Amino acid sequence: MASATAIKELQRDLETQANVLSKIQKDISKNHQVRKQYTIQLGENELVLKELDLLKEDANVYKLIGPVLVKQDLAEARGNVGKRIEYISAELKRLEGTLQDLEDKQNSKKESIFKLRQKMETIQAGKS
Amino acid sequence: MTGGEVKGTVTPFDSVYSPAAVREAAAKVHDSIADHQKDLARVQGFFSDNTNLINLVQRLPDELSHDIMVPFGGAAFFPGKLIHTNEFLVLLGEGYYADRTARQTVEILKRRGKSLESQVESLKAKMMNLEAEARFFDSTATDAAEGLVEIMEDYVEEPNKCKPESSMTPGLPVADLEKDSNVASISDNARTSTADDEYAQIMAMLDEREKEELDHENASDTNKELGEFETEAPAEDDSSSDEEEIVEAATRSSTSPHSLNNKGNEIFQKNKLENPLQDSNHEKSGKPIGGNLQQYVVEQSQNSSGNAGKQTSQTGFSARRSFTGSIIEHDDANLPKSSSNQSTTSNPAKPVSRFKMQKGNR
Image (cartoon, rainbow over all chains, first blue to last red; front, side):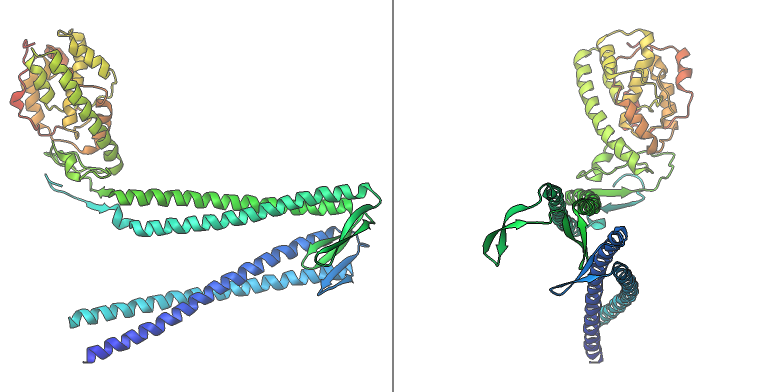
């Protein structure tokens, strides 16, 4: 019957929509995690910059690159850390934008799923 | 609800806050509290490590060199010396190290300690919020499980009806609260809830008092009648009468006219309890006493029961009075006091004719 096929189609649609929704939700949670990570790194880098600023100009600064401690210039170290901070903040902002998009998509998907369900229910009610 | 028109909705807590969902939410909050506690423990561990390190760094420069056992490989040590005791390579973070003296190292460590402390504080604050949330959820869950019902009614002024409205009473069916009187709508849930609590208490106290009075003054028929007499509640807020006072007065078989006023109020108040929705403005202290009962009765029937809202104040302060059972003659001079305000009465549940107190009947 036409209504039976219609119901089957609707169910298929519902499944696909549900899959898409779960993917979006996974993306959102990943986004959260990455954002948390970045926030921690940002905090640490700010601390390092503060300490570097407190150092006298002739102090020795070393950077751990793999198993090697390499002597670094204080000014250079300050510059590097500053740039890293900027990079991390930019990444955070980008992630926030993505998060917003994902959330919007999630909401719209939820609504469409809801509507689909309602349609299914009315058809089934009509049939029975 | 029975009786007059019922306006309003009854919403069981279960529907508004389904117990299962509330319990789930409570469980989630508990979980997050546990997580935060773990974090808190971790950060506190860091803080204590930091303090130990500060102490060590402060002690090292005391000697030119220290004799130590140097770890060698995974499971071996060899004896050695710790030299350059004032020079430290301090990790600043993110793979950056700096050469510092002992004192400078200590300063760096202290700054780190401060940031750790602030982290601890914020974690603790978050945990307090979560705990408050958890408590709320738990209490809501238990309330919903008990079948707490929220009853909302519109406040409608009905001249000829008054009936105590139900309020939020856990477990009590609504009908229980409407036993005696006519229906009136209560506008204020909060007030009715307190009113009902007090109402229940007052009814219990009234029962006791009635028994006492019956024992004390069997001779006086009017005692019973007064007890049953439903009068408008004299709602004056004078707290002149205490229950003890009333009981004492009751035991005194004859009362002076002076005390009559109080008693009159009390009597009315007791009766008022049976009609919780009396208008608080009514003062009928002197009326029934002294034989103006008939007039009073007439007035009573004329009056329309008020709106339960005032009941709260009445029940509240009528709780302090009880029916003394002693009726004292009152001359008409006292009447004006009582009739000052408009009266609201509930249709007396007991027939007015039962009230036999008449002048000189005492």
